[in-house]
Length: 327
Image (tube, rainbow, N blue to C red):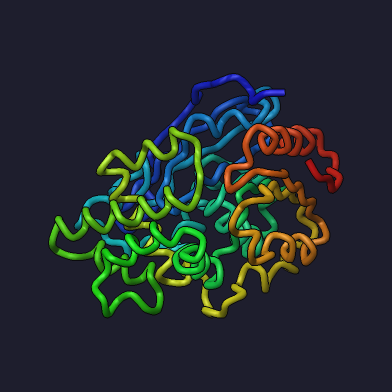
């Protein structure tokens, strides 16, 4: 079973969401099908055409967008004069609501990958009446503990790469929140400082999160590299703009708010996020969820993970519940 065939949007546009921002959106598949919203990762990545292929185009009205500052949305985060103070989790959720109203959608399934899973979970917790189901992969919850693991804890596993990562920071900035320290470099008025910081940040990500070649290649684009690094560090350095700053995080704390929303979590067993047990705890705090563990897979759950994601969207298209299973 492979992904659905490649398709093109039947409609697209730029939505004025305020604060000088215009968000790119597109719709694919069946205009009268079950609405599904796709949330890309990063934060600061983009909605790639491949994400359309996780849905039966005859059954779904598939909605994709490039989040503020990312991809085809304007202004880009890569531009030094782009105001990042109006790019927060609350702003992104408000954008989703504007888009839902613009497309005249009452409720929709929410599909998210990596950072998109954080955004999707919090959106469902704060707007439960508009989310029919959640399908999430490379699951994260945006907690301080996850940021600390990914920026510092993995230094014990990748010491040489981490040494290079730290070396780009001034000595006085190598303790504490490393994402916040990098964010300060990426806001420097010196373009050379910003470019060195963006490259060092994406080099560290490439070293620690194995990804398909196409995903790594995007970091060779200076514009994408800058926008991605600036957005990720902006969010990670500010508790993902989720609130209380405790290690466990708001999303896991508020898992009970997902009651009544069916969900599928597809997770590689070797994803470093599993070192904290957060996905397992989220699943057990959310009785309406199923957890699919993909053995010997990392943050990208690979072909077996794709099969599980397709099974989930196919199941939800029929309106049937899914069963917990291990792949």
